[in-house]
Image (cartoon, rainbow, N blue to C red; front, side, top):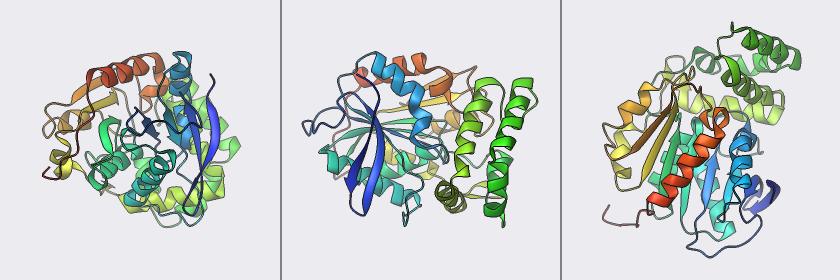
Length: 294
């Protein structure tokens, strides 16, 4: 097998997805499916190292990474993104899913669980947004007036190359080594106008100059019966790892794994370890049964 790229027809248009496992198939409704939800920039490609590792292991179940950013007339709220994932699962014939969300995708995963508890069987939150207000100043600045005019210059190829040299030299503000390069790669995707527009609209929906203004902490108890794993990079310069520990106050049964030497993209920094954890988590838990009382 190889990582497949294809479009899935949804109401209002098509959604580009990357997939390993059983690409293009319509599996049994009760079969395992894992959805990887990316962060604020970069799209589905930010999951490429993990998808390649899972493909190498020849996983039997579908692993799908949708590209949620940059579609015309899209709803760029957390609820809108959750609806898009619901539509994707419906189109593919899945009734239950494990939702793995990174950064903004972690906030989307929580929102999905709140909106569609009958579909969400497990949660994996990776350096997730929505678990505390602290956030890197670069993302806070992206919500300021005029950000949409500055981003084309900042995302220019020459600027990205220069900052990449600073990362290699250990003098960048976005994290050192591979962490900085993953961040720059995601940021470089904003050279595309549609992605840049989606980035600014989404950022302003959930962030202000003080930090993250949308919080899921007060609703975490609603996911208490959903098997949950929290993974964080111990050197994350974007969202502090302290948020992982704070979340366990509301989710004492959650599994917490900190990659001490990883940054904001632990699934890219250490894809083999992340794949080990994910597969162990799937094998050792049972998707939460839907309860109308809960």
